[in-house]
Each structure stands twice: as C-alpha cells, then as structure tokens.
Image 1 (tube, rainbow, N blue to C red):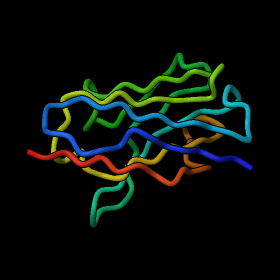
Image 2: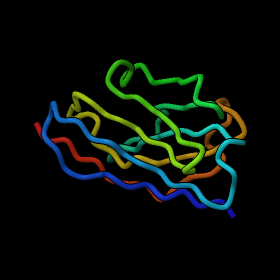
Image 3: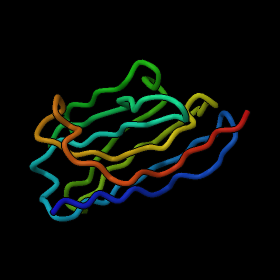
Length: 119
C-alpha cells in the first residue's frame, strides 16, 4: 500500500521561502512520477509541479514557474518542493502525489500540509 507523508508546511510572510518534503513508502519511488497539487480555501485542487521518474523532466504550473522547484531523491524515497518568493495566493493545503507518469501523476495522494502566506 502506497503511503505519502508531507511535511514542512507552516505560516510565513510574503516573500519568504519554504521547503516541503514528501516521504513515500510501500513502493519503489524510482518507478513512478511524483507531483504536487494544492487546494486553496473555497477552490478546487490544482496542479503545481511534477517530476518524472529519474528527475530529468519537471513541469510547473504557470503560477509558480520560476519560483518553485521540485526535486527528488530516489535513494531516500523522498521528493521536495522548494518554494521561493511566496505570495498570499500560494496559501493552500499542498498534497504530494504519485503516478505512473507525469500525465497521470495524481493516482495516489498524501494527506496534505498547510502553507499559509501572510501579506
């Protein structure tokens, strides 16, 4: 059974940086693409970023491109999302996901971690 556990979410000020982490268990991470989604209050979940199995290809939502960087460590079965120049509109619950490839990266979901950005 796949288990994805996010950590690192907290309250920060606009312009700050924050790194989220996700630890995977139950599967060999190197066989899967990984992703991050987020859900702001009153809004639907939206795609944030994805990385393919070997980390060579990454994809980002336009709203975070240039500010967020996703990385993975297959040896440690972890992925990370480095978030810089945070904005109040980045406030959301952030979810780690796993899938067969980047086009289907939302097959498995973690429980989420809250990020709150104050202006």
